[in-house]
Image (cartoon, rainbow, N blue to C red; front, side, top):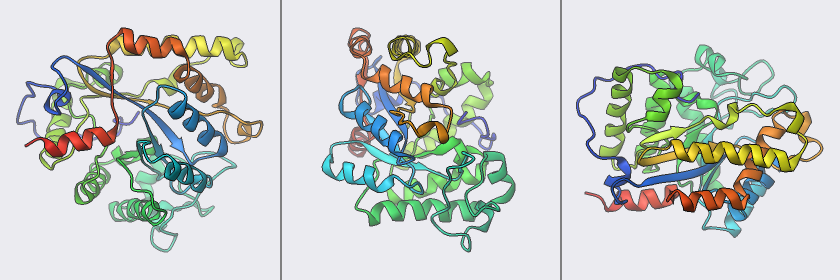
Length: 327
């Protein structure tokens, strides 16, 4: 879970009496949502799923894993579709056994981020054990530099496997890079009702997170009120994993239930839409989870639920434009 490693490092100083959605100019009480696809660029299947979710489905945003092999194809797609809201899925881990990637900064520059195989570490705890904040910052900048070199200016920054939230120092480097470049950073700094319920966090802990949200807002960047990061953990019953119709029904029902749980404010819902090819199973066994996300996003029943529940869809690009206008 993205906030699972975040340590209490600030003292709460102020209570929000309005949501960040309202501060950005959305009507009071609105439930404003970014439907976000992670992991573009990871594989051909990841690209296919992201593209379909964005162009045929309800998804409104995506982020790209810059160290991965299929980034060029996805960036070429973005150049042909400049209206797509696309950020960087800052990648500091390489978690699959047989399909891996290396730090873009290179081993000499970031030895602490590099495992014995010459790739990024497989887990967040290994990154915490071996890498320094300077190395994390160096690699984030290398990923941003590659994107810009390819003609891709990201609409936001977020984090693969939540690694930038693993320590206060990592988190501050991530936020500072966003502030310096005036690029929004994914950070849930509002009421955080979903996060608090999922992780059983104390009110005092949430207040500390809100303090950091205020810091980001005061630096001129938009801030999320909450984050929905449950979907990867929804267990797919074995009997429906290979049945697209049943898988679509199952995942659609889950996402509609998620919509009903949303409080007023700005929430990012994270998913991992993929359209698995026959070789995708050799990367990961998460194919049914990811295909289910795609099937839900392209389901007319889900699109109707968005309308019926009055959900306001948005993008990071829109949030940045709104924040620039707010004094």
